[in-house]
Length: 262
Image 1 (cartoon, rainbow, N blue to C red):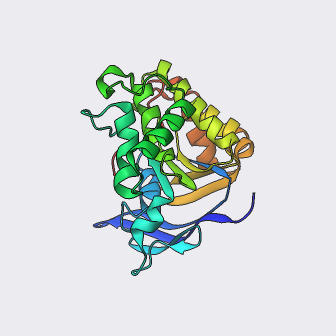
Image 2: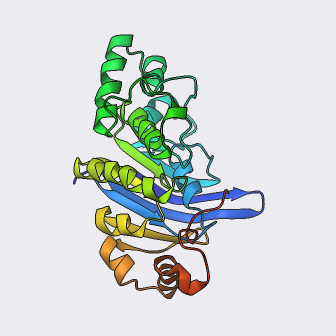
């Protein structure tokens, strides 16, 4: 790993009087996988959305591959081309096939011709395990398959950084594994990834570092195994006890740790 892919300094974000992020400092090195965990409303999704300026920060600076995206004169379109983002919801065009969904941004944003865009789309659909489903419409695909189309769509733009905002939270439990398997492969291939997740096993096994966010601040960060298995902060221990054994906290399994809309 070398170089810095994402550099965040003093990031603040407020919605009216509600300060969601309160001075976040975070660096993600090129080729690194960083998972962000934390309770509902802690600011995880807001942090991710600020990285490509889907949310306008209240203060602080964000650099992606050395370019300051928060600078007033920043070329946002050019910087965003290098940032792939996968959301909780798939956001596919229902009237387009899987192939069409993966080619449309290539043609409109990157100005690739029809044949080249289709070739790259097919390569990336195969990469996420959907070879042979190019002509399927979203309504004929499972939730997990739709999310993998969304990942292929992002990869087809040749990003240097991938942002994942709880990509499995909208899926039925039996469909989660296929999406996580694709993300594991991307990590093995050296893709820089900043991942908001409630999948603790994925974070433990795949992440180089884990960030625990609570109340808009970084409470703890460190190697994944250390933060998840031997957290140093009491608040981290309390959160993980609830997430890893939700029944003991009186909450349905799978509900603790998911972030509410902010």
